[in-house]
Length: 175
Ligand code: RP5
Image (cartoon, rainbow, N blue to C red; front, side):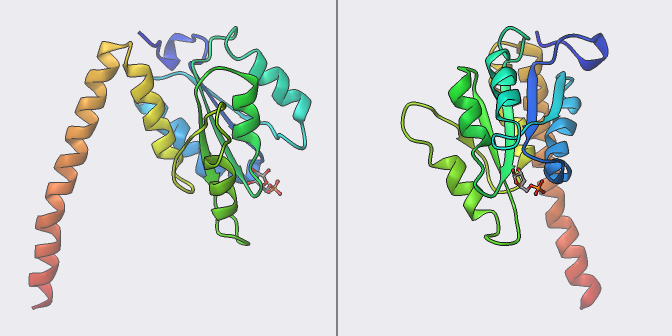
């Protein structure tokens, strides 16, 4: 079973981002993982500003105990792809929105990895889904975590059902 943060174990998920300007989005991944009791570590590492640091980080990831890496980047966004090239761990890429091309540049950069080095890609700014995908992968070998995921889905479904009541209340309040 994946150990909890409180047990001070080695992190199972590495969350990296190209700049601290990505943090507001990428912290969502950290919060989701915390919610499932999964230990993670968060770092700013850039494929173009600190390429040697990235090489050390990714190539030592397995021996440090990481199981999955979530990498967020904006613009040309080569961080997830270069990370995936340096490790056989699963890499989940998060394209980050930027004003000039609204995140489409990052989305295409990350999702269009040439065959052989895959990067699982989530929607623009969707760090939350990246974390949930990481949880789903980890849950394959962790029965309690799988149960927690099932409970999470039930909660989502319940919240969705309650929305019917809410929109009907709004409609009747206006009429
Ligand atoms: C990328 O360039 C980062 O991932 C970030 O999304 C973008 C802009 O970086 P800053 O100029 O804000 O540092 O490397």
